[in-house]
Length: 218
Image (cartoon, rainbow, N blue to C red):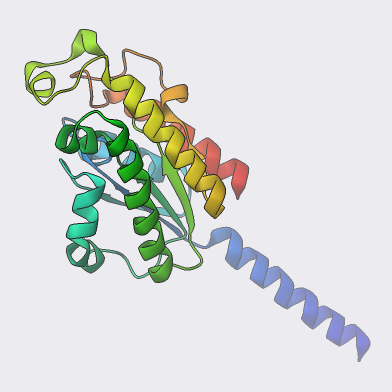
C-alpha cells in the first residue's frame, strides 16, 4: 500500500512539474511610442522579439504613442478595457512624453514618479500576482534627431531628465519591491532611427536585455 501511495505521489509531482515547465506565460508591455515600436514592423519590435525568444510565451503590446503618465491615469477606463485576463509579468516604460507635455523640470520628474506609483497600484489591483518591472526610456541621440522631435522640445539636454526619471522609477521599484531595468545603461548610442525611437538593432538589444532579466529572476 505504501508503495502505491509513493508511486501515486511521484506521478502527481511529475505531472505538475511537466505542466509548469510547459505552461504558457503572458507578458504585458505598457508604454509609449518606444514600446509601441513606432517606425518598425510589428514582428521586429522588442515586444514581439521577446515572445520569439522565449518558449511558451505570449507577449501583448499596449504601447500608446504620445501618451505621458498622466494620459494613462486620465484614460484608465480605456486602458483597463484592453488589458488581458491575466499577466505573469508586466513591463512599464513611460516618461519621455511627460517631458514633451509638461516640460523639462524638476516638477515633471516628481510627477512622473507619483503617477507611476498610481499606475502600479491600479495594475496590482487587477493583477495581484504579477511581477511588475519598471523601465527607463533610452537616451536621445542628438546627431540623429529629426526636426519633428527636436521641435517637440527634445535634445541632448533631455538625457539628464530621462536619466533622473529613471532614477526616480528605480527608487519607486525599490520601495515597492518591483523590478527595474535601466535601459539607458544597457543601450549604447546609435540605436535609434530618428534620434529617439529604437532602430532594428535597438529593439534587438532591448529584447535581449528583457529576456536576460526574465531568465535570471524566474
